[in-house]
Image (tube, rainbow, N blue to C red; front, side):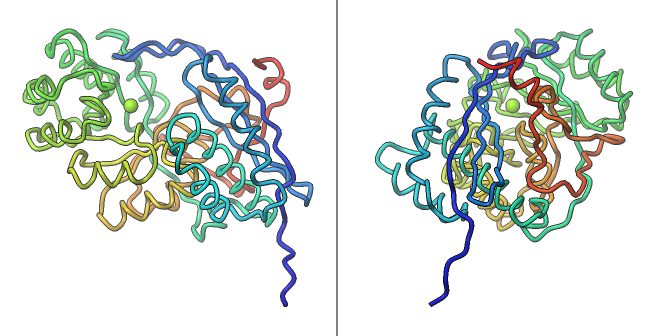
Length: 362
Ligand SMILES: [Mg+2]
């Protein structure tokens, strides 16, 4: 019988950090001033480790998330370094508790670290391991809920850096203010700039329809999460009534949420979040669903690994660029003329800046 010489999982090293943001990021649903992150290293018996980052949004969830990940170590210790196999095993294990929330975050942390480890063990870039080749991915920059002047300034600075797309937070008290922000961006960045807007779920479906009637004339590339993320019927109503494409996905937990949203015709485009969709394994399923349905795919945060996954997504659309987590990485994602460029670094492209990791340790 064939002897299994596959590398095995030895253990987890889990650390929590609070990375301050250079400038607070304002949205219609709150302000973000720091990134509470859990960094997971999964060590294999080859001596090689894989890395992942998960984002808990609030520091209150940092310790519980780190604790959960650490507690899951015992469930996979000694298992083969086979991310898809481990994913199926853990999915079964947590079927009764449910795969959303902190459990989902912990499972994604493990999945992403295992894929990274597998690529490293084979000395391959993740993109090559997945059977694809690296290519430049068009990226857009973020503008916060910064008012007319601030949004115009933001757009100008992204344009100066060569970006060809920007996404602004809107959801001001009136639609006239939303329009004024969009026009300030257009004026600052020019007609060729793709402009996306994000309501961060702050409208009712009816309000969204009313606002979109006005915004439909502004030539927007998409309108993101106009209403509650899991109100698929509400989003479908908005998508039917609006000419501007609707974008959703960052809050879908797993590909079943994505399927339900697509079946409801809630969104014209999709933008999974690699953590909430279920890590690399979840993303690959999402990419296949989107390919089958011929729907364009962007990402939410995680620029390093998402650029790689967009290279493996046949209907790839835009990369959401964010530099929030750059301080803890030795080589953050490179952008040239508005395109995210990945080289042939092995794994998913994340190496810890250990000095910064200890400085921001929580
Ligand atoms: Mg968003």
